[in-house]
Image (cartoon, rainbow, N blue to C red):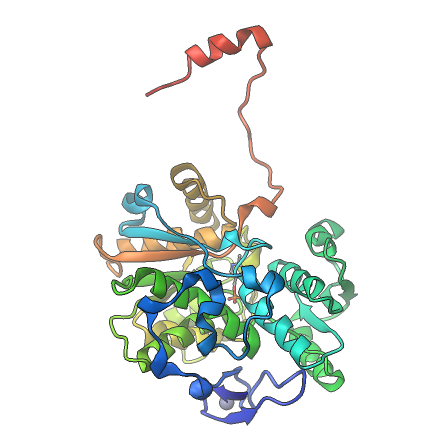
Length: 399
Ligand SMILES: *Cc1c(COP(=O)(O)O)cnc(C)c1O
Ligand SMILES: [Zn+2]
């Protein structure tokens, strides 16, 4: 396997169980597409029964079976009730259908299987959210020890879903942003791959979200895909998928729009400023905690992805995220994470600005499930006696 840098063009061989993740220039590496049978890609002939492995000609490994074989082929749901609010024709790619409830399973499946193939003694990750849960689950299924590095001040409550898979959880005192890079380096020396959010193998697996959307819609591709963005790993994968399809001869590929929470939006800030590179910001709290990365390791690459595909990066505030999250549930029956609801809020904003047209076909990527949350919802539910149930039903509002 060869790795290449999208920014400077440098190519390096992926060596050992824990290959390099960063280029000398500082930018992230990704898996070189040269080794793939790009010319053989036939989106309409793809058998999605094989789930994400339907695209294994474009992946660095074959399906290892087991839990990994259950990843992908998530539903693409037409949600016409949301069209008016969004200002365009909406479908939702429901990544919550995955076993740990987020698209991270696509990257974990590839990263953990590659670690097993390479004979790594363990696999690691730096996360306290969906990525930690997902990596731990796939390591458990592969019977591979897993190390999860979390910030020292994290509450035990937030770790419960990660601890369920029994990885070694270690609280680390110090700069969490730096830990991301130091864990990669320390792991490399010990042959322990850290499948962090934008490493080449995770990005390789996560590019199948976009490949699947295009296979599910071929030959009538959507006009746009809206994706919540944090580290920029998923956005990099989506862009890589589009680049590979373009090399395979496909055109009229969708524009890539990236959504951030206004309280922590370094990539949207760089986009608005017309900057070439994303700089770290001081982020504030947001309900979209899964996308609150103030110093994204693949931020600049994500910025280039939005620009190169004719899309944009935008940010939406927490009130807009709350409203969008409620509408996704009430009008479309989808319980998504606040991070995922940014996509609907962003589509509305983009339509308002004229970047999306009313007849544009737009796919919102619901990256994660809302079922993991224990948030405070004011629930209206009166108590009646058993003998009153009939009365209650007779007064159900049928309007
Ligand atoms: C990780 C995550 C994201 C952001 O993905 P990046 O690859 O870090 O940009 C978005 N939504 C959810 C639910 C996530 O778990
Ligand atoms: Zn480089």
